[in-house]
Length: 247
Image 1: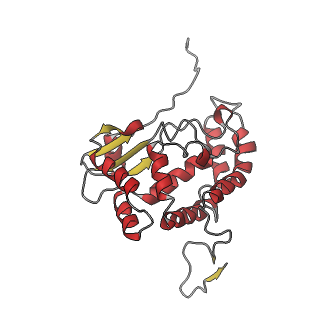
Image 2: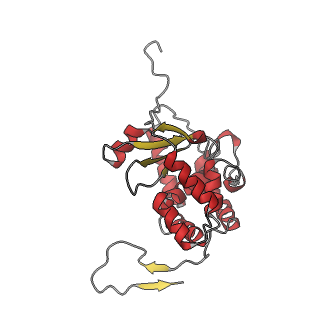
Image 3: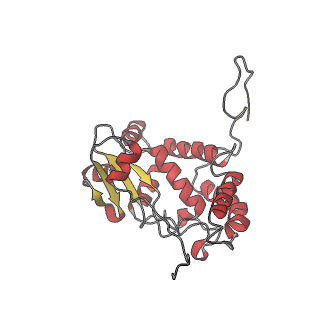
């Protein structure tokens, strides 16, 4: 304004067919779904078949679970849920979501984070917020898929495995890694927001884990409080390295 810089842009790619083609490769058409199962691209035929199958079949049966896994990227779904419940994302579940699949044999639906600014305590959402009793307790598509799949012991075990991957042993949701991401963002924005609030660093990150683990336990998604620990946890080792495991 009048030659002075007054703000900043937050560009975001639209999660539509060109986005999917660019990031996943290929030139085939895609089904891209949004709130209310409305198609942004393609149609809802396979999406409706998936939802109806999950809703009507016994997901505790191994063959049913495997059939769902062939249609729906369950690792992606669990990781997507984990990052949103960790951040306490609001205005979500019944709103602000994208799910897509390539229109090709063997393609699976995947969820993508979208419009998730209601997170990390925004709008006075407390650090104790329980997404399982709020956003994932309703009758929106995502909540219904989660609640049905949670009946499966295989899905609960998958969830426990992904918790162990992301919340332990240097995982993406470990406090040090989340803090590093926040500080990088704060440094990047310092020229525009020199007094950027530090509530995320001083309140959310130090306190979120305790609440989150309690919420996950309440959902039956923690297989153990003492998962096996390898020496080292991962990475390359020399031939003949004496790997040990403690439980």
